[in-house]
Amino acid sequence: MATWVKVDQERLNQPRQEEIAGVTVTVYFSPYDVPELVGGDYEEARSRFVVRFRYPGGPEPRRFEDQDGHVRLGIGRTTGRLHELEIDVAALKAKAVQLKVNIANAAFEEAEAAIRRLRERPTSTTPSPASIPNYLAASGALAQQRDEVFGNLAGLEPAGSR
Image (cartoon, rainbow, N blue to C red; front, side, top):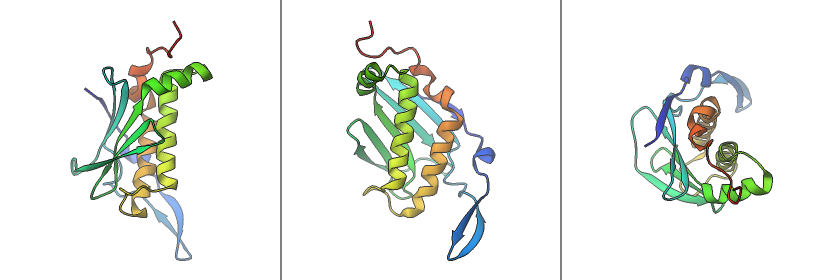
């Protein structure tokens, strides 16, 4: 079961300047795009690490899409919000041996890279570019609670390290 960690929504939702139709305005994330909770769970039987996000308004039906062969995204059908990020830990273990990196750090970096790719190249399951602020908020929530979310991977050893 996922270990849920509360996200500091005020700290995450800081004002930023954007230019809209030639006018510089101060914008915030929609409160519905900022996760309330983020959690991570290692599913040993499947060798998968699953990051989950909870939002105001509760869960919604999701579409799942593979990204990059060892990352699977769960994206809300209606909102386009990122609800789940599933990482193939067996693939990360092999990569960690080659790079001599910690599995928890590798999983965090893989999650960040997947969210970055999602922002840069929306998938067929994202309804509109309006989802991009959610991806930024999800990335910020992960970074904010990195140690708590990815902590249960710290004890895993890279493949072939014994």
